[in-house]
Image (cartoon, rainbow, N blue to C red; front, side, top):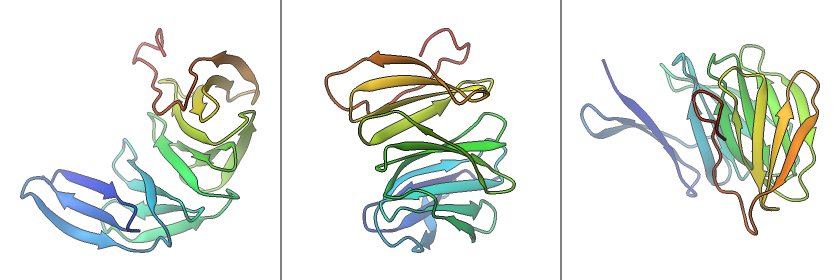
Length: 173
């Protein structure tokens, strides 16, 4: 059983590593600009990449072939992450939006707006009903995915929110 790692770089490459042998087994060069984020689906079927070129690419995690290129964002895509059940993934962008995607249909289900600048990062709650986001504006926002409403906006930092995660029991963000 292989242990696979994907790494993205500003040289427009995604490298696939087999950690059991410590070797790069594939180099993917489909993006036209730097790669800002990569994420594997928890079920192991897919991985997605987010690029400064404004696209998200969906990859087959077994063959490493690009399945689809999503171009819904109007600027570079900063971050991607899957929900715990692998049914959805979230993307953030320089265009100040957060998008929720259906993994199977590869369609954008909703666009969340409310940050005053680049949205740097987002994360699903463990139950998949909410998303938290953070950005260049230093604000953390909590979104309800049933209503698309921002439930809370916290002036959290005087600078960029680089990372954000729920605890597994959802008691702490």
